[in-house]
Amino acid sequence: QVQVVESGGGLVQPGGSLRLSCAASGNIFRVYNMNWYRQPPGKQRELVAESHIDSFTNIAEPVKGRFTISRDNAKNTVYLQMDSLKPEDTAVYYCYAEILTYDSTDGQSRDYWGQGTQVTVSS
Image (tube, rainbow, N blue to C red; front, side, top):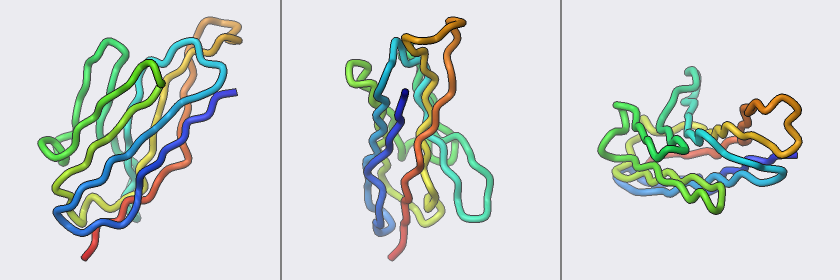
């Protein structure tokens, strides 16, 4: 069993900051990619930031320079620091993790998603 749990969402004023956390737990052998996605109201889910096991990171253009992704491999945790928030950043933020478990029968990793955390930017 694997769980991916986000935390840290909430209501913030424009220009403010939030830090999201996502922790993967359970029967984990290795965590590969840990990414953040978001889904604004009425829109499709989009990639916000990605963090690979080899330390590669990527930030999507709409949030580049304002959002930072970091990762603690010992804790199987990824963070999203969001600064200078704008109303258009309002969305449900989802964590994605590519995980290989100890009980894998084919040696292949699987995709896991968190339940999402709401971020609302409004005055």
